[in-house]
Image (cartoon, rainbow, N blue to C red; front, side, top):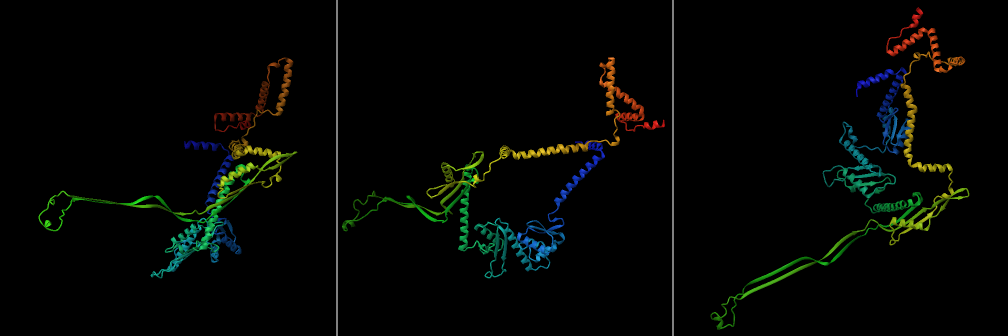
Length: 575
């Protein structure tokens, strides 16, 4: 894009505009720029100031807000409330009121953290620094605990004993936490233990057992006593039971609502009986098939010549020389021994079984459904008649309910389905008028397209606004109007008087032509031309200087000459 050409085109358009159009365009640009500047400045303003007002306190509790407003009213200080947590006062009274309210202990629920150390104080002692650190640590822990979902407000107090060089004299630190729970909220044992561990991990040498938690009613939470444990267990059991019953009720309503005509036409209540006693058992199962635990085999072998044996009857024979048969060496000795020991083990399986948290004993369900409504005409009056469901329909609904809740005859479950008229619709029914019926029909057919029709209607309104307002205004502003002094009346306009004269002349001329028999070849255009020619001759004779000036102006405009036309009227006067 050639910027030079674009700039030249803009200049040409500006030159063609008259003074009024230029004023309108410049005024519009100034208004747009002023509006944009206002938006920028307005959005850049901080929320702390508004019409000379500045934030006194923000993010304070509703109780503190009430006390602060009460004190401001007593002091006759004007104030504004931006929201429940922000209070604004005149800017010149902000610091004075903060100091005054702080002396009264307001706001009470305000907590400070480690921002206490943002400003250094010269001359502060070690004791002051320890107290500031303790306050900062308590404030940070209070903020952290208060950020949890079930907790509305929290306050932490720490007891840090003095350090001792003797181990036997060292005392462990302790902590206490006061929490305010949100409405209808409770803390589970895991959450309580989590808070204790959080506080214990933030303080040196602090054990979770030394952290005590109480609620806004002064009741201890997470205690080790049997009463606290029983209350927490009972609360957990009730929540478990309620959640199961509500789940089954929603299942029944969802499965029956398409059948009976909507969720508002069915009511279901489920009662479940649970056995919360957890049983632990140990089970040993012996396998009848023996298992070899160990096996030992011992084998002994010996083979060789048997040693010679000399013996006999004592006497001479045994004392003399070798006896026959003692010189033989073929007598051999062979010894073998085998021993096997097998130890068998009886296999067994030891199982430690812990029962479920809750076991369903029985389920009872009561379901109430609405009937049907039919229109009946009693004469000319249209009435709504209630029609009860048949036994077959009630049986089908009962079977659906049983399938939804997991009905079991072994447990002794019970399901009751009843049919009643809801809200007595037949007595309060009013017949629809013809207009209501037509509107209902239109809504039934056009209703699905209403989201689209809204956008179409907006588009039509914008189009009409554009065509009827914006476009005519733009054309009126951009149209080039000549000044009043430049308007020149045409010398050739025929007024009503001339038109009447022309008609009379035409009638006379037509009569004369008819009398002479020459009227067939003359047209009305020729007569107009003759009249205009005669009028021009008369005007030239009466105003010759104005006619000369007119022709000079026409020639100058046709040839594009910028020089002014000569004044023939002055020349005529001199002559």
